[in-house]
Length: 124
Image 1 (cartoon, rainbow, N blue to C red):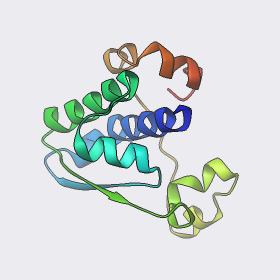
Image 2 (tube, helix red, strand yellow):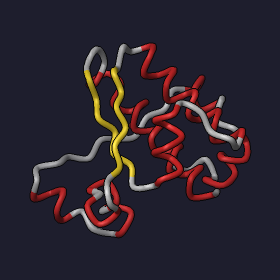
Image 3 (cartoon, rainbow, N blue to C red):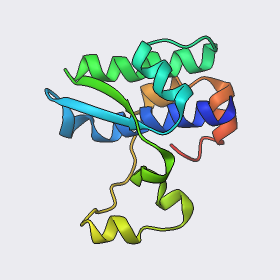
Image 4 (cartoon, one colour):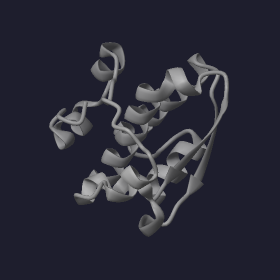
């Protein structure tokens, strides 16, 4: 459950960071975590903390008119995992640039304590 919480929180952080670029557009969200993928696609989760984060994801989508679609990506093909594995070589080759993650205070304040503690709030 800890990893699922972190994965859903990562989706929320990405949505918060890039909401300006994807507002009023269709966006495909790729996840390599089945729990995060299913909960986000369904719009709810059985675990309260996860459910709250998923609600926040869809609130960002609704507020910014983002037509969100969720797809599964195998872990080996997930480009977003490269930096967490200590490698940004492929992303650099593809011309990716670093964007400082951002989550506004109202969203950050609404992150459930259990998830915040499991992530030490350092992710945000």
